[in-house]
Length: 447
Ligand code: SF4
Image (cartoon, rainbow, N blue to C red; front, side):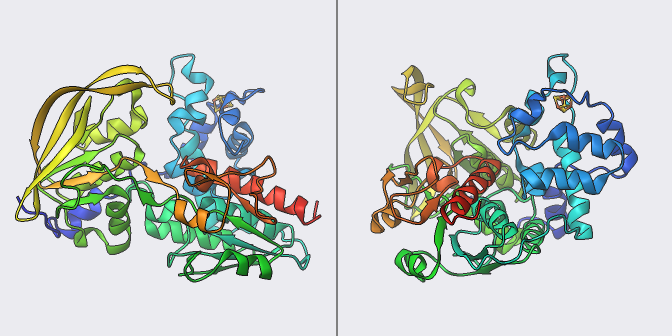
C-alpha cells in the first residue's frame, strides 16, 4: 500500500478541487433569491453574524441592483466578507438563523448573495472607503491573518500607518494556508489580501517571524502600539506509540502542502485514517479522497451528537465517500520498516459531561484494528505557548489573556483572534481585529 503523489490527471485534479459552491451566473438569478428575503425588522440573521453584517440591508440593495452599496454594507462590517461568504459555516450562523427555517422552507442563501456583490467589488476594484489623512501614529501588527488584516484595515481608515509582520510568504493566515482548496483557492486569497491593502497605509513585511526575525521589545520601541494576531499553529499530538512512523502527518501540514505545493505534488495513501471530526479533519479527509486515496476513514472518539463539525461539512465527507467510525480513539499506530501499516483503536462509550458540556468518551477496554498506510492527525491545534511565555505575556495554557480593552499585560500590546480564543471561525477573528483596532484607537487618543 504505497503513499504516493501524482495519482490523478490534471483534469481530474481540477474537477475534484473545483468550487464547491458555484456563484450566481446573472443578476437576475441573484435577484430571484434576494426578493425572497422578508427583510425582517429584528433580523436574526444579522444577530447571528459575529461581525453583525446588516444582512437585510445588503440583500435589499441587491434586489434593487445597488451592487456597490451592497458590497459597502458588507465590507463596512467585515472586510473579509468575500472570503467569509465561501468559508463561514453559515448553517450554524446567518442562514441557520433565517426565519425561513421556522417555516420549514429553505433559508435565504445569504452567503451566495454576499459572495455575489463582494466578488464584483473585488473584480472591479471598487474603492469603497476613504482613508483619513495620516495621524502620524504607527502600529505594528504581528500576523497577516483575518484578525491582523481586519485590525489593519480599520486602523488605516483612521489614518494610522500600519506595518504587518507575517512569518509566511503570503497573507491571509488560515484562509490562505488552512482551508480546503475547493472552498477557497490560494489565488482568491491573494486577491482578497490585495483588495484589503488597496486602501493604502498598510505594508506587509513577509517572512518575518516573531521571536526569530523580530522581537516584541523591538516592535514596542519602534511603534506606538502592537497588535498580536498570531493565531494558533502547533498541531496537537496524539501521544500514542507509532506517531513518528512514515505516513503519519498532521492535518494542518497536509492542507498547507496542498495549498502551497499544488495537488500532484502531495503524497496520499491508498487507505487513510483521519483522527478528529472538526472542520480541519473534514477538510483533510475530503481532500485526501480528492487527491486519489482509495479509502478514507474518519475516526472520532464521541458520537455524531457531539461532533464539532456541522452537518453540512459531514455531508461533504459522506458524499466524497469517506467512512466514519464513531466512538473510537487511536491507541497505537503499527508499522513495518518504519512505515504505517495499521491503526489500533480503542472502542469508547460516553460517560459524564466534561468541561465543554459534552459527554466525555470512556475507554471500554475493547479494541479494533484498521489496515491503513497513512494517518492524518486532526485533533486540534495548540497555541504558541513557548512564544508568549518568552515575552512574559499573561496566558492560559498559551492562550493570551486580554482585558475588556483587548490589552495584554504588556503596555501598548493588544491581541485578538485565535491566539486569544484558541481557534474559532475566520469571521470571529475578523470581529476580534475590529475590536482590537477600536481599542488601539482609544489608546492612541484617536477617537
Ligand atoms: Fe431575510 Fe432570512 Fe434575514 Fe429575515 S432572517 S432578513 S428572511 S435573510
